[in-house]
Length: 180
Image (cartoon, one colour):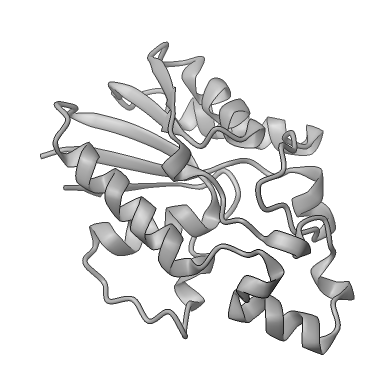
């Protein structure tokens, strides 16, 4: 039995402004650092063997804050990286036209976006690999889409790629616990 803690990174300025981040290397916002520090204190009594995180700056910063109380290895893994938002990276969702929203929601390849299926597949691959490791307890710091898919796969929930309401499962700096 392995305990898996899944955490969404803390809030960035772009999160606060409603700007699509995708794979940008944004830092945590000043206001979020206090929240992430609070989460780290709340999580301090948990035993973890290792932290896995996306290679993007906001997840690495979050992992480092949490790790102040654990002093374990932090291992970056590209399979945990944020979904590629293509041409919508850096754009405010509130300023997109109806047509642009339709394209964004359809994950159009014409817009150089990564599909949800692709994210699902790499998260599933990561979990398949993780199950073969000899850890008792791990923390995974990633992004909302990846964290939501992790939760979905661990819970053996069916996936409907046309109805992805469950992809909004994690608040910034939220940690959820699972067992596999």
